[in-house]
Image (cartoon, rainbow, N blue to C red; front, side, top):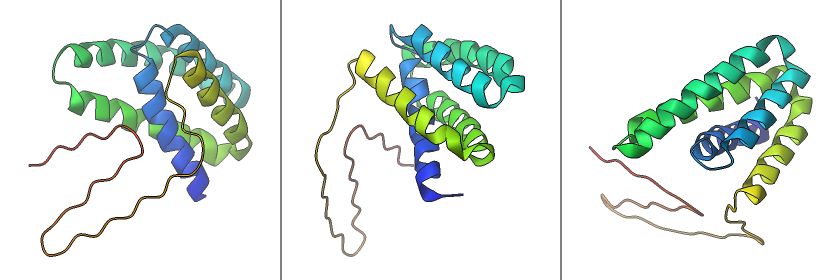
Length: 139
């Protein structure tokens, strides 16, 4: 699969799960279901039900230490987006536009311009870099 589409699918998975616990969750659900209705109409009702279930799970996870549940949800929606994009690559532009619109409507931080990060680790050192949120669980 095209690396751009993989990245977009990953962004979609994270964004959808993040937005499901915001005040804009209904717009998120409506937009995602509309996208599926356009490209995979036979799966749209399932996507609708899965989004409702995902919202309940995400809300429960937000009340406790639900990093594992959130990661599973993100993985699920990433996989759903990958399936959609692999079967319908032309959906990429609409998915990207939907994510941008939802981010604007929900006050997400926008990054304008380029980001350049550089790091070097030696020995047993570790480097963690992120242009935005980062969650690390070491065991």
